[in-house]
Amino acid sequence: MPAALVERQFDGEHVVVVQGDLVAGAVEVIAEVVEIAHGKLLVDRYASRMDASGSTDAAQRIFAAIRAIPVGEVAGYGEVARRAGLPGRARLVARLLSTSLEPGLPWHRVCRSDGRIAFPQGSHGFDEQCARLRREGATVVGGRVVGRRARAATLDEALWGPPA
Picture 1 (tube, rainbow, N blue to C red):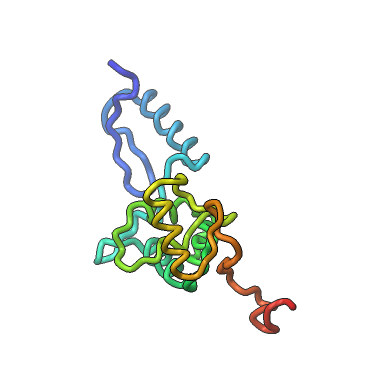
Picture 2: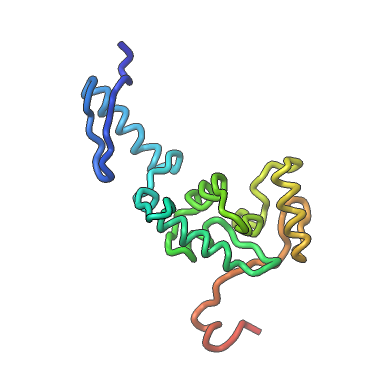
């Protein structure tokens, strides 16, 4: 019998081994915790709270942050997560964008923190994102958006205006 054959239940807070070898179950759970800690497996408390429409609070906040990016500007996955009140959740933003069927979502305005397009160069997604950004007036050179970074104003900038 393979050691990893374990049936588990997850109640939102705890993993309980229901059937199978407890040692194998413990090893499997520890392996998943290590993957979560290294960002390879995404288990998110926010993603488990659904509203009546079937969408999560986190997803709604992330989509609102993406919609707030001005036309022709871009923001990194981490910046979108920060604006949504989920700092450090860049991978959650990427996962939601990769699976979203949200109509009218300007997904093309989200890129890597250094302005690079995340799709492989030459792929359909890469070409589509570059085309959409260029139609909005952004300059894309070698798969990287030049300038045009959307960023939240600091308190000083909000009070006194942008730096000279």
